Length: 308
Ligand code: NCD
Image 1 (tube, rainbow, N blue to C red):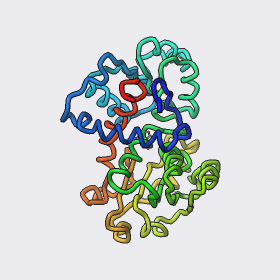
Image 2 (cartoon, helix red, strand yellow):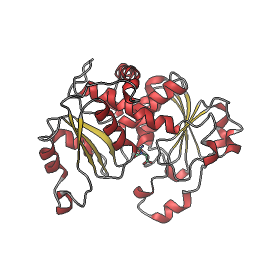
Image 3 (spheres, protein in one colour):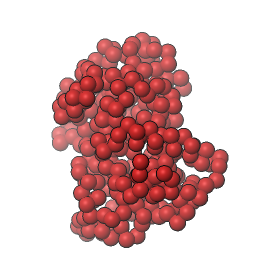
């Protein structure tokens, strides 16, 4: 298996063996990610962060991963202060930045932007979210979280919320299809998972159940993966307002769940999870956001050829 110089664009590009390898390397690197062990795995590595959409966890966990491993980051900073505001194209920005860094982490509002960037770049492109498309590094940390906190093989999961625009949900479904998961998709009717993805899953013999009622699935699942309604992607904000408050996870709902049910969320949450759940054994979302560090450290060390 050779990840050196690989562009990380879509979960569809990964086999189960590749994912398992990344998760194993992440486990080995966890002490470095926690700051308990020193490492120079990224000595001389310069990672460029190009974020054309807001980010807290993805950007900062990439930074944390690189800096803890002895490397450095080069941040585009605010769009207003860069030449993007003068009308520079993404293709031009990429061809400039590839000369400044060893890899580029890109978040962009347009679906397909990362794939396009990879065509222009001689250094690896890592897709940190392309519009409503995919978010593969989030999925790798989600899988790591499920592996560490529950059981990944054959997991019974409900993915809830905005399945139409939610890129984390799209990537996660593709990856879970490699692990024989039983996938329950819970969303308002207007925000269902794109048909193409549901068909791809069924084509892989994955059991997919679609509903708008959380109570129908809550008793049976091991993991509840909540997602935010992606307000910024709604063409019409009144459509957003109609569905914004649906599917809130409350203690009353979790009373019906398995005792070891894990509640995950890529964050940021808005209204999806009642704060009273934060201190229960169900809550997994803050651990999940930490796991972004070892997983991104593992991915970068493989892509940069620092580990095999
Ligand atoms: C997600 C994203 O940007 O897609 N955030 C993240 O990376 N953890 C989820 C979201 O914005 O709702």
